[in-house]
Length: 188
Image (cartoon, rainbow, N blue to C red):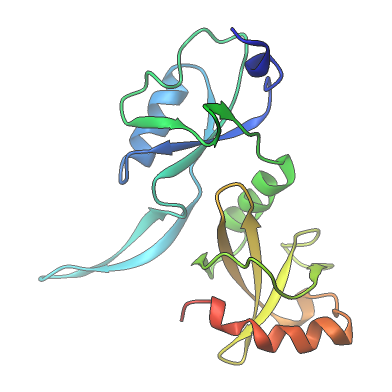
């Protein structure tokens, strides 16, 4: 094993995977002894004869795996795995805080989903109270509603969470003005 991979021991890595295979690949990684994480959200799907609410991967074509240098089972050998997200075939680890934020969102709130990545935008704020306490992100207004946008920088993907006003620590006046400028980044 190369030195670069040994330095990744215990770190979260992003895998690019075959679209719609995220859960199947996650199960394959678990069978090989890896800790995996496929963040899901509830989405309404309409078929010709019915409408159903289904759990859908938050980031289509991606999942997260905690690398274990002691595990000799190949990750890339799992059917459907395309490769690690990184540079020159070397994976770039994801910050633990980003994975923890995704876990808090997917386990603690009901109204969230994928949204456009905010390249620039409002000042980052931290939630002080409620089930999202400690979560950091950017606040935008969308249809008279406050939304926290949390991003996974490596994937250039974001998640919105609808907030109640009591959950939010008040941003500075400068950040409040910027909120209104970035509402176009979120889906309806």
